[in-house]
Length: 384
Image (cartoon, rainbow, N blue to C red; front, top):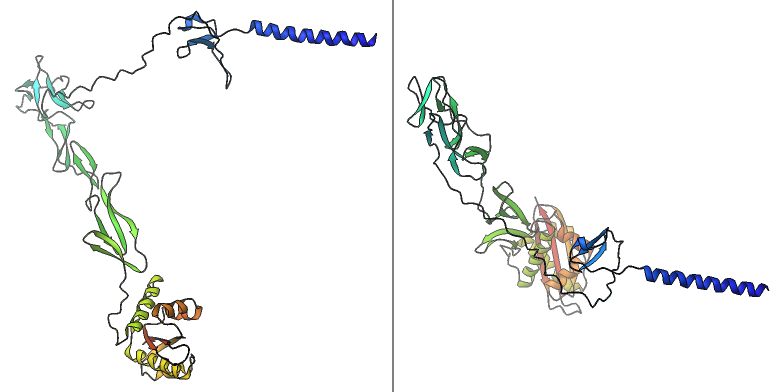
């Protein structure tokens, strides 16, 4: 009995479930075809591009299903959504010229003024002449015989200054005194405006110290110099035929003190390295050159490198100095090779880049009979 009852309950549930599904499918509305919103049910609108009615509000990512309908007529004519361009702005038609005036039929005065909207010159509304004056000969004439020279409160520019039209004691108008504009401004048209003190021509370039500057027009319409590039420590800004450019400093010694080409090459490389850190170039000295050569020759004879008796050797040159240093090396066959070795050694590098020293001597002894064959010496001093 219990099993049969359970079976009936399950059957009843399945029947109810499918009945609800069938009812929902039968009552689901189809998307109605339309051309205009008034053809749609209440709270629906017509979508012209789809030609169907849809609810006024749809949830996000809603999907509208359009079922096929063989009885749908021809598609509605496309809607012209083009925008008609506004009519062209009328051409300015001046009806008078500046400073012109005339008398109206009623005996009042009218002046030629600029329309702030169009910028055209046109006649102002007629204005009654002041007391004790009448309009005659296109001007208000007082009983004293004077005439209005301008429209009261009108302004104009004369030689960069501003002038206003004022009513005088005799009842007529006249131009007042010329007033200077505020500092940095000049009078243009009838107003004081910022006056450009253009320092250059836009697009122009030049060197200013170690910088390349460009003439640029700012937001105020004035031109000024603006830095666009800064030369490196080993470069100098120079102006050539193609304009300003940063060029490498010339590290070639002006005097070679009688050095060989290899010794000259070392001096050039030394000053190039010093320029990179902003140190001034070292100058060669003939006495230091001879001392360096003598020590390289002695090292070749001894077949070893050393700094023996450095102070005595420098004093023997007879130079007056306050500081001295020395670099030695053996085995390198070119200036580039020996400089590479020195620059990769902290102590040797410090001597080469030191801002203490002002002069240098470089000596090379080659053709030695030992395995090194090449001996190099650099002597640095600071002259008094």
